[in-house]
Image (cartoon, rainbow, N blue to C red; front, top):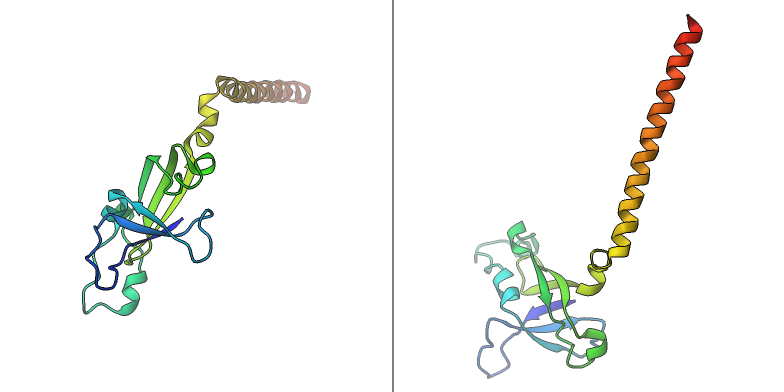
Length: 155
């Protein structure tokens, strides 16, 4: 998802600093947009570059502390399509250079944590680890026995 800080409407008041417009999203069609309010996004946006800074300075990457993860993100299109966009998401949020654009990558929380949530999958995963370790131990013992036999044969 790509969002931009909302701009002032012609002749209207300045929007709040936490008001954004969703520009790119799989639920937003060509020419459409969606509103988004988020203090997290506005906190990540860097200050405007200095007035004497070169024009390309706005495209330089911001520092790593300007990236955030959110474990209770709500998709702004949940009201339009609750079945597809409702619920809790895990999200990574990062500004695009020194612009008013923000990229948001989201995954459903229940899908992202499915391996941790299902105890059967944990048992299968740990069983695989145990079998691998057992196989490595067996291979090491077999190699040591073969080495001893070869040394005894050479004497």
